[in-house]
Length: 335
Ligand code: PMV
Image (cartoon, rainbow, N blue to C red; front, side, top):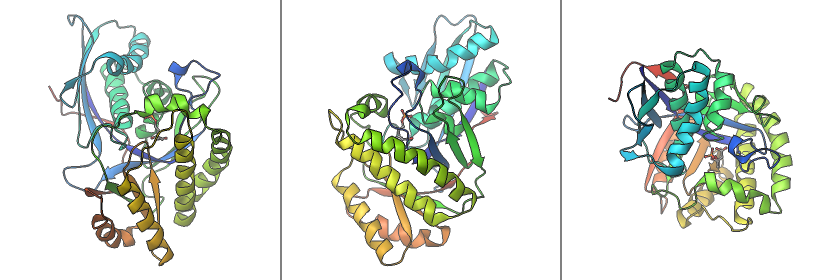
């Protein structure tokens, strides 16, 4: 029972930040709907994907996992088991597992490695256990690992519903990768692991006075951006995504304790994008829980932006991306 899967990371246009306090925090029911684009890296060695192999066997003494060469322990292993356990229950199998997972990009640096990781894990584990689940049902289980991860199950663009129960807090595809003609250029400012993970950061969101505003704005923005994606309206998509990102960082900065994810290089890139837009080059930014920036643009402006961003002080390197494919089972195993 050995199976492998790959999944790509995703970037949220409408961010999930904070878990619903009305539910068990372990359920990861988000405070608001979120909207994302699954990413395919355009560098030959960085496709922004996780490749995972999992094997179940009655003779294994315990569950074990190695992620990017490091054995998963404590909270890391717990989050993996949180996804695998319900699948084992559905399959009525009690075998322990061995799992190996490799990312082709920096882990936990605000590039959504948890998203691709949990999506690939769930795809591989469900297939190994011979479960035939719809992606919507699988999305509820992936959410138990990380709230942004279910979106990586889908090609193109995805919509996560906040929902009111475990079952209704699911994710669906908005449309495939071709519908919206968009590219993103990731300006990498820092590839180190962040000091406060998003898993911990969510807990402080409710302490910010801006949290209520962010949630009500996000509700309305999620509806408008879904429509704009389907109509290939890049200006609306970009401007809503940028505004939603600023709302999330306003909440982070004003939380107790405050979370400052931006570096000096982050601000330089923000100002560069703002200046280029004023000069007529249409581009927008969005930033997750880290210092790295995604610059959103139309394909025809990508070369010009790559040049401009790579020479901005503080940018270590750039990774261009296009809308990518969803999680899928593959035949190449890692062990
Ligand atoms: O899924 P988590 O717990 O890694 O949280 C994701 C948080 C953000 O990346 C900042 C926003 C998002 O919706 O992806």
